[in-house]
Image 1 (cartoon, rainbow, N blue to C red):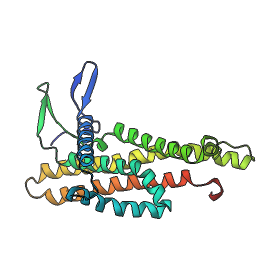
Image 2: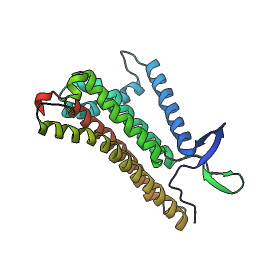
Image 3: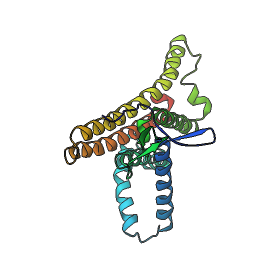
Image 4: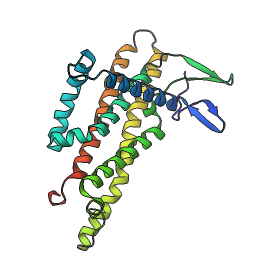
Length: 243
């Protein structure tokens, strides 16, 4: 039976810094996105080619969905970099975690670990990503409403009830980080464990339906994470009178 580790395994280290297989795949995903963005930008033109046409066709439904939440195409285009980047990073890293392209490697002749592991199956990654998403939400609110008006929603002296509710709202921001990170981590890690067990018990063609299921789950989890970020942005940037 293959070993199941809840934490990311160490692949190599640089000095005292250990590089895990989840970090390695996160860096690879980052490089893929950066290179793809540079290639796409170099090919932008008024008369779009096939690649630009495909990207525009993919962006249009996403912008329409964002319009339905934010109520404005201007706001959708403004917050697209945050929502779109989170979606692309999570979904591509999830899919690459299912197709690592390499087998296990030997570590110190004692045990073997996969060279790549889905970053979202590492709780450190999902917590960091959730923190970035929530900080992005608050930054968007500060830029949209102003620092004072935004934080007046959490800390106000209008009356004791509003003060108490504001403190609860502030605490809920930290709860969002926990729920964000554990939801993504739990689903992706459970999928990896399922594929590992099914592949050990029934190799060859039997795991293929489960593999396709995890491809779908990886997409859905990235979609949910990015859409929740979008909803939180819409709530945080709405006018105070609307609450």
